[in-house]
Length: 306
Image (cartoon, rainbow, N blue to C red; front, top):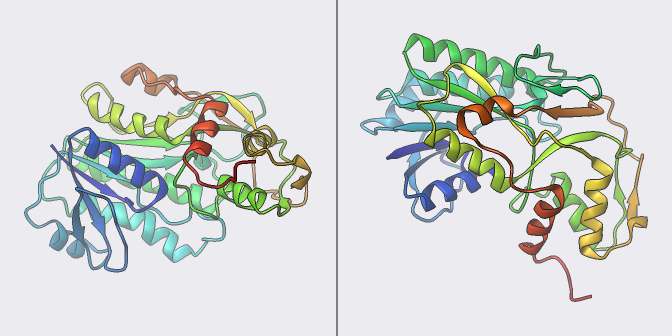
């Protein structure tokens, strides 16, 4: 079975590709000339530019049973170029679908909890909630899903979006929260942080990977043209998350400088309801915050023996 994965060089993409290969799937990764994909047993498809013709030339006679679209622009704070946001999200998916050489069993697009915007504290948000993104990235993700749904309907292709909440684990880029905290603590450098009182819905990377595998294995059961929350449904205070990292590293919490950073665009509460995805796949997270952090720490060579 052939599966095309875009965005395979990223944190989540790399983990998904490796898991698919381990499951015995024949995995194809779309790569631009300047990108670097170093995953064993993967098939590389080169694409020169983000146009319909560029995609058609790249695909040629390839056949795909499933497509997972993890490619995006705007994940990193500060990546707010509007043209790149539209091109790397909306145009990318639209061109991909328009250039497909065959009708796959299903396209899995990746959405984001940032599509929901600010949520009332204590409300466990489900997919019926109105989308009110307050960031360009959240808006781009919402628009990408709408365009993807419309194109898929026109071409009679099964299309779903998985809205990922906070994902963490080994393999994260250095600018992300967990690696930033780990790198500073291991070098006894102060960690500048927000108040830490925000409550988030977080998932360990293995649980997220299993959500993609579950979607593929249950594709016949999952209704098309719908979005599904991939989340734990468990609120975790950011301060508790970071202090547990420090505990696992045997580092003093005095290095954690709370309230130094102010981010008014961040919601204080963002916790989801995963019952809809569970209804069709029986998927449930297996890792608590503590177990996820412990597994992440065990895979990172960051501490001396003390």
